[in-house]
Image 1: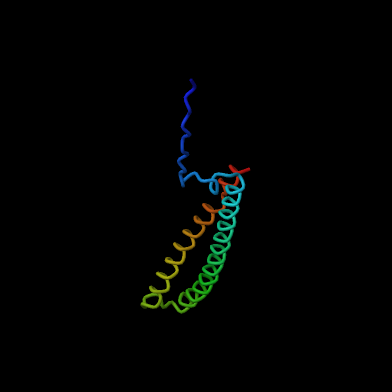
Image 2 (image 1 turned 90 degrees about the horizontal axis):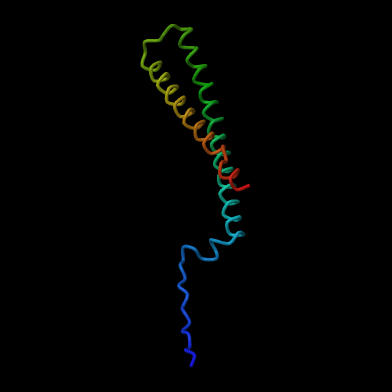
Amino acid sequence: MFKEKNTKKRIVVQEYSKEKSTLDARHQNMLQKMSLREKKVSELKDKKSNINEQLNLLYEANSKFKHDENTECSEYNTLWNTIIDLRDQLRYIEKEIIDNDTNTDEIDYY
């Protein structure tokens, strides 16, 4: 009289497994991302301070060349090229710090 129902097998998709979709797993992933971001920002700030120290030393050496009025030699030009390269690196690092320090994911998380 009544037909027996066949049970359907559940297809498990690895992309949306429990380990990735539970609230606790998402919370742990967000915490890991935040800690990695903080670590990266601190490393970038260290690099920035090192570059600033190098720039200060190069500016002092540059001022010695200006006092001697020996601005036509290749050492002076190399010094200026190094200063320009370090300034470019500094700008790039500052941009990276700002990009990583905005924490839009953290704001969305809360």
